[in-house]
Figure 1 (cartoon, chains in turn blue, brown, yellow):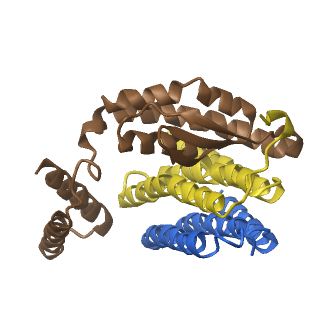
Figure 2 (spheres, one colour):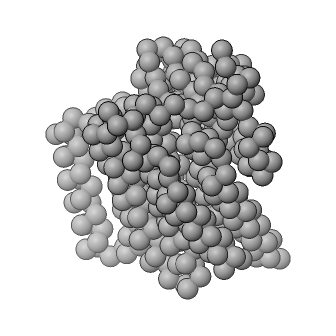
Figure 3 (cartoon, helix red, strand yellow):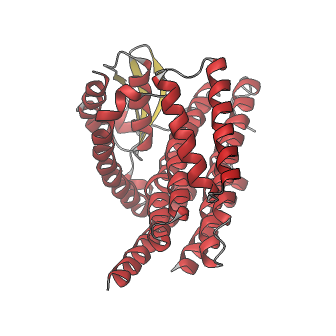
Length: 89
Length: 156
Length: 106
């Protein structure tokens, strides 16, 4: 079951990368990167169980924190610097 | 004072739950960091009823139980529409009234709207919230005002 | 006996969660505009994440690992609406017009 779950999460991550490459707006890309980040947290947790390494959960926790901060930081940057261009990039 | 104590309690639980080592050295280091963190937050003046909403904690668990049921139902609805394809969705935008008086109540209501898949709160202006929904039915359900009423009840 | 029930429950949670995240990702690829994709991403961040972490928690039993999984779950549930709201608000300020169905136009 863990392997099936890990494969599903990997497939979702590939789909998120496809959406990030397709765009079309900058916000779609940020949404895809955010999705990728939360799925990375899940993948790290599942892999920790799969290989019997409980210390991976600490890495997952820290990654969840960093992911949120980075998404909000990137959003603040684009919200206040690209307002005139209508968000198309 | 009670907010400082509750912050110290939360930090202590976090330390004990995350460290996993219970030797005297680690416990004293933990106590030291909890005291330091509480002192710094007290000096920054961020320990108040907003960061430690003690007055809400009684009723909010019932509200979250109700919200979990709501989230499961709307998840099923959105997943169904994803597999049915783009024909089954009818996105719409509406401005809904807010009846909450405090900022905290408004934030809880907007967060609950966003947490339920199928509806996202876009902006709050005065006493209205701008909501984007996947279907007209979910807007109609929000206009039924049940969630708004439940969040307003939390404030009392 | 009890261990078997817990194992079956955790497998069910993991599989259902895997199905839900794949559905959400299909929605992110399939839906027509940014605001509708947001709802599909919401599915993967609420119920799917909860189910997968719940399955792992059942696998771990009463231990420090369950507490850490609970922390991860709480953190994701608190931050995901904040990130979604920040994203929609930035898109709105960026003058991105939401696609609205004709029959809902007023």
